[in-house]
Image 1 (cartoon, rainbow over the protein chains, first blue to last red):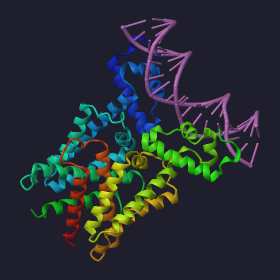
Image 2 (cartoon, protein in one colour):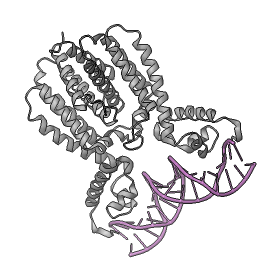
Image 3 (cartoon, rainbow over the protein chains, first blue to last red):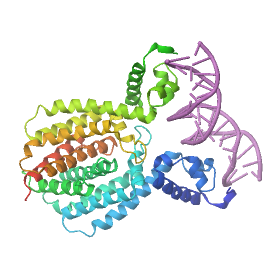
Image 4 (cartoon, chains in turn cyan, brown, green, purple):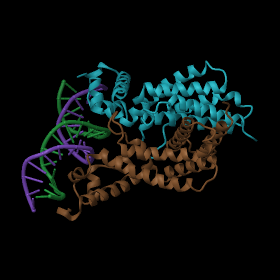
Length: 202
Length: 202
DNA sequence: ACCTGAACACCGTTCAAGT
DNA sequence: ACCTGAACACCGTTCAAGT
């Protein structure tokens, strides 16, 4: 058993998040418990409560890390494209690829419902908004044709659509339905939506 | 305490599902436990295991009921419309309205992940497919222009999009963003997607 | 035959007690 | 000062024992 100042508070914090990431990546949120996590870093459950407010707090910080990783990957991808359509397609495919490669970490993002009705903390909301901003920026070249409100609406409609596709794919409903891959749905959704947006009246 | 054959197996089954529906509707899946549910119908926890395989089985049957109710509501709505666009819009709005009116029962549909990797039972998959078929049928008048595969792709793309919008709305991300209501996102998604679908080349 | 409820192996969280 | 680990109030699930 680790004792005394073998590790600083910051070190324990970092060790716990890293171990939680491993546990969740492998077994999902259901595989995470205070006792198991504490054992994984050589401490007992009580120690976690000196560093995190509770398990919800810990999971929220884990999800914050996941959003950071996703944002980094998607931002790189979005920098390499030309047209709005290519950009949004690339963002969608990257999001789908991330969800498929890290099913449990991605799942934890939306399986974890914090306190009932309580709003998400600001620092977390900032990370979520930052993801949406990638889509808004990708649609930027359409800014001349669209009001800021329309741009925001389009970004939210498209992004929740991509999110829905990931959920459908993860639920296994698509499996064994040859043509209906997440990638194909993503392409259909984005191509047709943007085509409709370009061709709209008014 | 209820004893002997106060109730038949079928009666206990029905009482348990009805009580579970009340508990989940009010407190969410987290508010459901074998002990609480048994107490609500005047039995002890062991009795539930004479009627259900386990809690997962019970929740799956509860979700089956919810899908039945949703299907009935959406099917009625879909019968009253004319064009594919009007039909899909009506289905989307009805789905959103159901999710907003029954947040916890709707949430239980996708919060409940059964055994890891195990497929959903056939009788449940049938209920899910039936929902998708409503969208396919609504898109029916486009059948002349689309191959069966394209029709299926469009139905899945649209329906996962609507589902994603509901999730975004329920997560509270949209709140206090005046213009960005679930209804507005639904309309934008469907109108533009179908417009793109009609105007496509090839 | 039907149902109970103690028992087992787990939870999250707290906090007096030890080093 | 830092960390432990027993304690409390919960879980899901089983099954010998009672009526």
